[in-house]
Image (cartoon, rainbow, N blue to C red):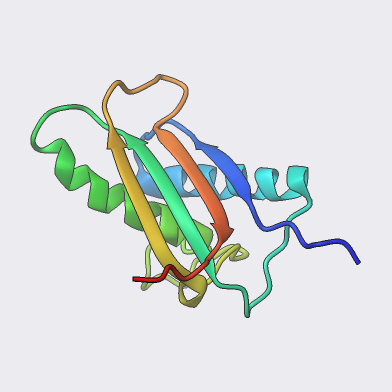
Length: 127
């Protein structure tokens, strides 16, 4: 029996308002990556998200990091209109499956992308 594939890499689309539309684009990009690699996640799978976000060097851009991370998590969970909305689309990953988020901030934003998302199997690290 072949090993299941767990890993996908998604180029995040450029951020554009409204944020609900950007979440929809992130969700679509993740679905495309899943289909391309033949990956599917089960409820019992524990996952790690690796986010690389290209943001401006301004001090206020730091606040955008929290917003973009939450947008990505909401998009993967199918919450396009926010956590309290009943407007949902099919979830890719449930919040309970995410064990670790590794975040890297870079400068030098591209017009084609705001960064990259990688979803991999979570492996506990010894201390």
